[in-house]
Image 1 (tube, rainbow, N blue to C red):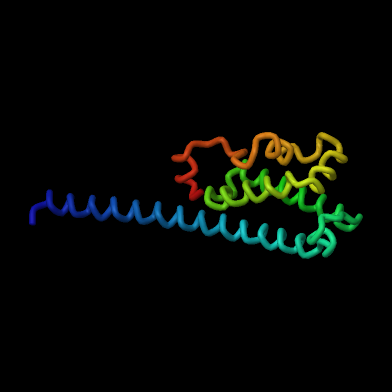
Image 2: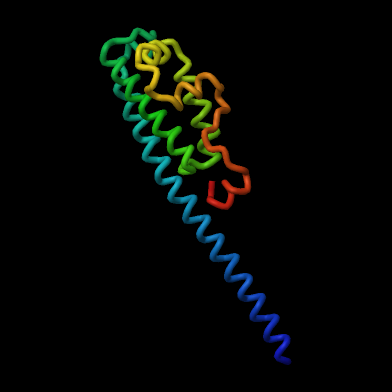
Length: 149
């Protein structure tokens, strides 16, 4: 084989190695996102387990439930902050944003939110105003894909 063929073969191997390394970096990034998302899912269910049965069944809110609602609003604000800084994947965000919206729009959550200072939970308030498709991450699809979102 001539030197030109060896050069072409080595270049092809190099291109393959670079593409493989890029794929591995995106996979690693996606896995880190998933681990973080799972931690927030665990926090969510921990909070939901703190609700009283009266609240779950009939929406009768006790003082304990108000505390749970406040903690849930904090959790939502954290999740919205994480999405804004590109720590939540697009697939997860599609599910989370609709779930958050439907829960926060319910009367008990709205009552607690209205009773709080208007400077608290700005992302949650924007979500309520904008609807379930609100996305605090204002980046292009290409940008998000390159970061494993």
